[in-house]
Image 1 (tube, rainbow, N blue to C red):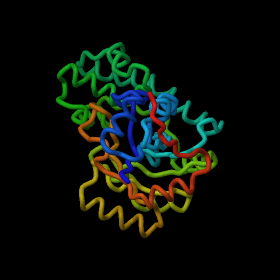
Image 2: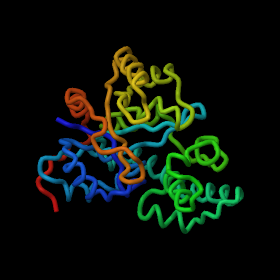
Image 3: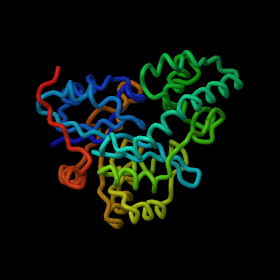
Image 4: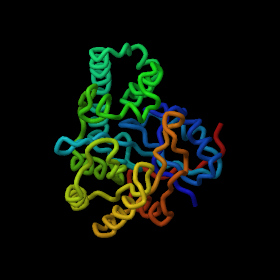
Length: 285
């Protein structure tokens, strides 16, 4: 089985619609793909309706969190999307995205960059607006060569010249909320240092003690030495070790299935989840 547990659609900051995402996942030879848009479940219905035969969809989300001033992302799988407390927290985070993006536009304008809110809103479309949309605007204007080049201290990285904070959930609260909604939690790309500051291993140990299920080990932002270190940490803490592409369509260079999750780990995730179940494809439109 080929299992990719981290992919984004136009419901947040990917460039594939949810329907295109699942069709592309099947074409890439995946057996399982997770839809993990940022702080939203809005893409579920379209993805399920288009799900090709032979492909299983894992519903999820990537939750925006912060601890001790460091931003991090928590992958949540197979939770009940209507559970009131987790729904309210996702909406709180999502609603703060617009003023945050507008603040980044204002900072860029002050730096002499002629980006406009209308441009960013056009790029985001119906998705939850975020930094990658602002980064894409910088690419369109020729300020940077690629989206990843915008995530530096010169521009949009944490603490960068045009960075603006947003509401982010305490990761221990995120773990509690996801668990209460029947879901499973995996710390996304925990050692992606080029994105900004990362949390220490001691904090990961504390999260493990609080119920964290796993860490994302095989990821494009982790080199081989980092993967080996994280795999050892996962074993030491009794955490599941996952792998995934973090696919964003054309917004990033990674491909669906570039990194994958061991079938036994996937099986354990599905066994632990009680809020929702993987959706088998039946040949969608």
